[in-house]
Amino acid sequence: MKKTALALFIFFFTAGTLFAQAPAGTAAPKQPVRFEDLSLNEQIGQTLTVFVDIDSAEVFRPVIESGQVGGVLIQWGNYSLSQTRALINKLQSWAAKSPHKIPLLISIDYEGGTVYTPITLGFDYLPTNMMLAAAGDEDATAALAYLAGQELKRAGVHINFSPVLDVNSNPHNPIIGVRSFGSDPENVTKMGISFMNGFKAAGIVSVIKHFPGHGDTSTDSHYQVPVVKASEQELQRTHIAPFAQAIRAGAQGVMTSHVIYPALDAKHIATFSKPIVQDLLRTKLNFNGLVLTDSLDMKAAAHYGTIAQGAVWSLQAGSDMILLGRYIKPQATVQKIQTQIAASPDLRAMVKQSARKVFELKKQLGLLNSTADTPAPIDQAYRTQLEQISRQAVTLVRDRKKLLPFAPQLPNGRKPVVCAVFFAPSRFADQLMPFTKPFLEKGWTIRSYNAALTPKAVDAKRARECAKGADLLVVTSLQWADKTNINQKNTIQALFDENPRNVFISTMSPYDIPNYPKANTVLATYGLNKYVLQTAADIILGNQPAQGKLPIDLPDVK
Image 1 (tube, rainbow, N blue to C red):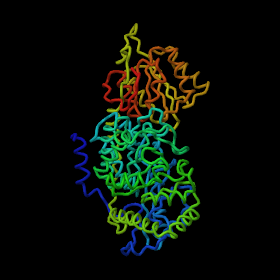
Image 2 (cartoon, rainbow, N blue to C red):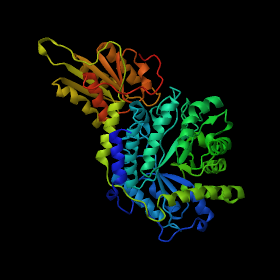
Image 3 (cartoon, one colour):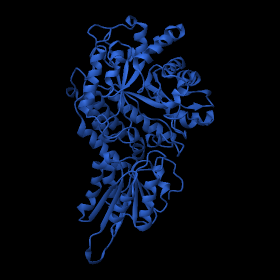
Image 4 (cartoon, rainbow, N blue to C red):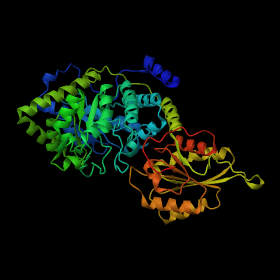
C-alpha cells in the first residue's frame, strides 16, 4: 500500500476522538425490538424500499409511519448537504412513529459518472469508475471510497448502490459506459473490490451491481428489455467473474439486472429468475448476503406486469430487498403486495427469511440500539485524494505529429495564443476555468468559450471566432455512454478542418474518440472536474507526463 494511502487509513481508523454519538437521521427504539414481534405487514415492509426526494417525501409518510416500508432511496436533485440531512432526519422521525419504531435503511446511488453529478444531494464529486481504472491506483481508490463513505455516514446514509461491476464489453452500450471500470474483467475486479472495500471500511454497506452483468447490452433497461446472447462460458469468464471475486472478498449486497440471459434463463429477466438468483448467485456462488432488485418501475421490469406483481416475483426468485421505484402510489402498491403475500404460505415464509436479513443488518449497523458513530468532516482529505487520482487518470491516447509538449518558438518572442472551446453542460462551468491556469502562469494568452452541449449556430460562430488566429486550438467533447451528439460532432469536426494544430480532449465517454479521426493529439479524462482539466493543460505544456492508461478496448485510435 502506498505510504499516503496507508497513513490516511491509519489516521482515520485510530482517531477515535473524531467520532461522536447520535448519528444523523437515526431514530432507534427505546426498548429492544425482537423480530418475532413484527406483524406480517411489518415484515413485508422491511423488504420494501421506496424512492424519495424532498418534493415527494410527504407522499410516503403514511406507509413509513405505519411501518409498511423499511427503506428509502434518496433521489437526486439540486440540494445542499444540509437539505439532504434534513430530509433524512425527517424520514427517520416518521419511522420513529411506526408501531415498533424501527429506523429506515437509507440508501443512495453514489457511483460517479453519468449517474452522479457534483450538485446532487450536496455530496462531493465522485470520479467515474472509468477514471479510477485509468489511474489504476487501488490504494488511492480504496482511500477515496473510505472518505466518501465517511461523509455518507455522517449524513445518515447506510447503503450505497455501488460499485458497478459490469464489464463494458460492448462499445455501443447505451447505459453503462464510464459507469464501468472498463472492458477487462481482471481490471474491473481489481478496481471494483478496492472501491467496495473502501466503503465497507467506512461502515457503508456496498451493493455490487448489476448481476450477472449489464456490460454487453445494446439497449437501456430503463426503456427496453435488453437481451445478452453470450454463451454461459462467456458469461462466466467475462461478466460473472468480477461478481464471483467480489463475493469471495466479502460483498454484503448484490443488485440484480433487468436483463434476459438466454444461456441462463430464456424466459425471465435476472430479477425475476430463480435459476439466476437462487441457483447461480445463492448456490453456485455461495452468496449469503442481501440480494436487491434494480428499480421495478424501469420499463424492462414493468413490461411484464405491475410493480406490485414484480415485487412478488422478485421475492419468489430470491431477492431480499425490493426497490419499488419512484413513480408509484405507495399505499395502493404496498397493499397489493401484502394481499398477494398473505394468500401464500410459501411467500410468507420467503418474506420472513428476507425480512429477518434486513432486520439483522439494521441491528449490525447500530440502528436498533443507537450504537453507531458519526464521523467528523473530512472534506479536505477527500479533495486531496480526488486531486491525486484525477492527475493519475488523464490519458494520452495518441499524439501522431508529436505536438506535445507544445512549446512553439514564435518570431520576436511573441507569446502563444491558445483557444479552448468546451462543450459541456452549464452545471460544469465552475470546473472549466482551472484549465487556463497553467497557460496564464506562462504568460500566454488564452481565450475560452463554453459552448452548449448541443451547439447551435451561434455556438459554432463563437467557437470559430475564438479559434481564429490562435496558435493552438483545444477542444473538449462530452458524450454520455455511446450516444453521439451529432451537432457537437459536426461543430468539432468543422473546427478541426479549419485549425489543423489542435488538441482534442474527450471529457466523459472515451467511446467518442473514433468520431474524430482528424484529431491528431487526443487526451481522455473519463469525467469532468477541475483537476483533470488542469492536468490536461499541464500535459499539453509538458509540465507533467500523462500517467493514465486507457481501460477499454478502443480499436483504430492511434
